[in-house]
Figure 1 (cartoon, rainbow, N blue to C red):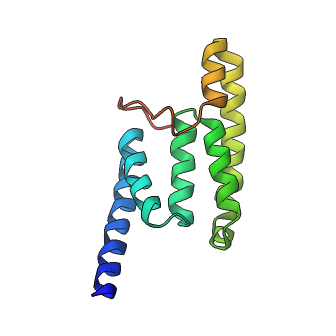
Figure 2 (cartoon, rainbow, N blue to C red):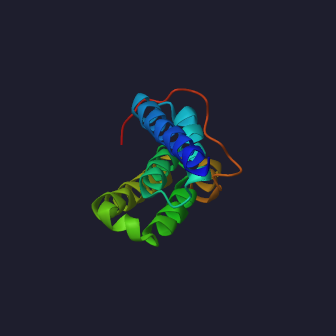
Length: 131
């Protein structure tokens, strides 16, 4: 019974990760985040899911939560396979933070640079994908 239950859980998580990736590529940040959080609920050390969450947090301008998740990701042995992508995310987050500082109002800067992911979920509005 237990092996079948675990297989069902893994299949559900795999499906949720694929769904998260599809929603991410469509620019549906809220739906992508919901799916990836489902995966992480069952597999909190899933490096691929954590990396996808970092991308979602970056795209929704929640930079500090994204950086925290990157630090969490870097502690995992399985993260070694994602070294290039982790470094690339750091660069993208740094660039995005600089853009926010240059163009935003003071309250937007505080929100983007300091808000925790748990408190401020992404908008349900569809965003255009882009860096």
